Image (cartoon, rainbow, N blue to C red; front, side, top):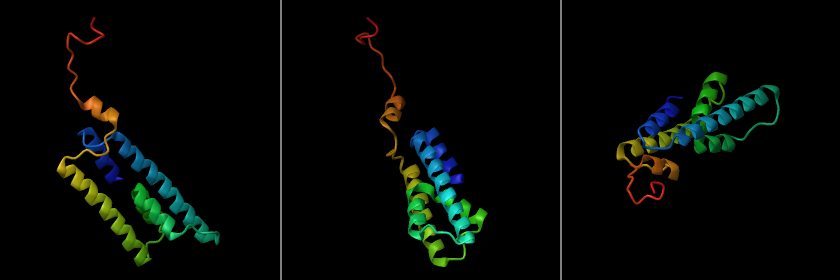
Amino acid sequence: LWFIAGIAVLAALGRTSYWMAVYYGAMSALCYSVYAGDKQRAASGGRRVSENTLHLLDMLGGWPGGIAAQQAKRHKRRKAGFMAITGLIVCVHVLGWTWLAVSGRTPFLTLQDRVLSQPIEQTRDDWWVR
């Protein structure tokens, strides 16, 4: 969850939208619940969630929750191939956000964020002053 906290810090610095932290948090919660459900079905012999689906959820931003579930539920940790792909997904996300933080780019700011971050200059010609 340190990653989501880092996104929140970037949002506080004006480098991204707070919605990105909310998005990663929501995707992480979803991913955690899918991993936990898969572990429960594995123990009871039920229908499993495919590894491709788990990786897709990780790629879409749920990887912090996926890793938390792997540790808490001891799920998929012994599968070297699965863990390698998960590690690659994590690296792509972390390196991407690190690059954005260092470069000063702000690609995920919403229009509202961009408008609110601009200084407001009021002139005598503004319609609401008349």
